[in-house]
Image (cartoon, rainbow, N blue to C red):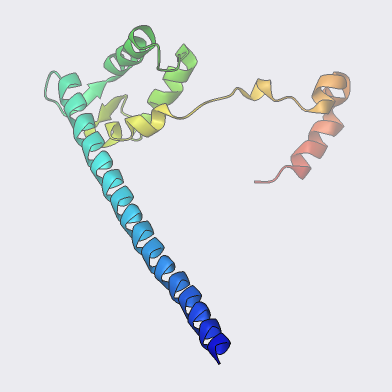
Length: 157
């Protein structure tokens, strides 16, 4: 009978230890997720306030808009003075400005400027960098009118 009691006691301890460890682990994971989400919210709030401050510094005339020349000068300063920042070509800066200027007024409003950080993460590649096998190996075939018609028929929207 002592063996049955020992077996019951050991199995009870194993199951209890398993559930206790799961409860502890669950509480640790929940606390970690809460702390992570709080840190992300604080980071977003800080970044938004810093972008608003940067906009206010760039908007010297208090018009609520930043001119194209000012934004291009900003891109130039980022290229020249911040080596950790990726280099932007003139074409890239023109494209980034076009992405920022959603209303097409050739100026950036504060609302448009708030996307500045995410726009800087965009990377552009030229379409000419991606040539098809037919285009590279058989340029005459690629230039033929029937092949271009075939491409237009196959091309999806």
